[in-house]
Length: 233
Image (cartoon, rainbow, N blue to C red; front, side):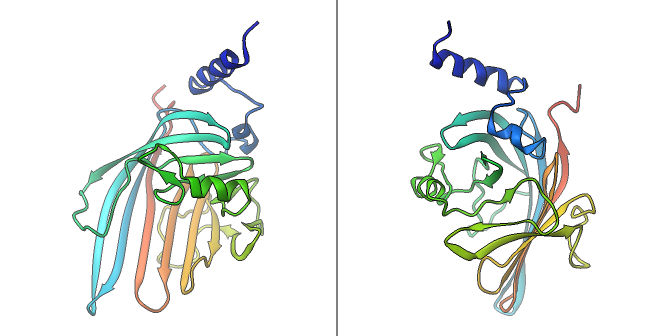
C-alpha cells in the first residue's frame, strides 16, 4: 500500500502531467482557469500619468508561462514565469516581478503579486497574505461560477466588492480584447479609482483597466494572445 506521502507525490506528478484529479479544488472551476504546464499569455501594458502638466506614457509587452502546478495547504498554486518581450521598461518607477502566480482557493482565484500576496525571496505566499486568507480577510480576484450580478468581497471590508456587471466593454475606448465573450468585473477599491477586469472562461484575464478620477492615471492591460500548452498538438 502506498504511504500518504507517496500517494500525494504520485497525484502531483499525475496532475502536472495533465491527468485529471477531480477531487482537487481546481476541478471545481469547471475549466474556467487554464492550468496546464506550458500555457502562455502575452499581454500589452500601457500606463499614462500626468507629470508636470504633461502625459508620461510607459509601455511594454510581457509573457506569462505556466512552469508548474503545486499543491499547498491553501489550495493549488499555478507558478508562472514572467518574461519581458519588448521593450524593456527603463523607468525606475516600474518593477516587473519574475513570477506572477495564481492561487486557486476553493471556488476563487487570486492573482499573486509581490509584497502583500507573494514573497519572491521566500518563493512562498507572504505571511501577511496567508494570515489574511486564513481569516477570510483577503479579496479574491474572481469567484466562480460567474454570472451576471455575482459579487464577492472581504467580509470585514464591505466597501471592497467586485461585481460581475455584464460582458464586453464599458467605455468606447476600452481594449479590443475586452470582447463580448469576456465577463466584466467592476469595483472601486481605492478612493477615486475605477477598476475594470475582463475574464474569459477557459482563457483567464483578457483585459484590465484602472483609471483615477482627479489626477490623471490610466493603466490598461490587454491580452494579445493566449497559447494553450496543447495548441501545438
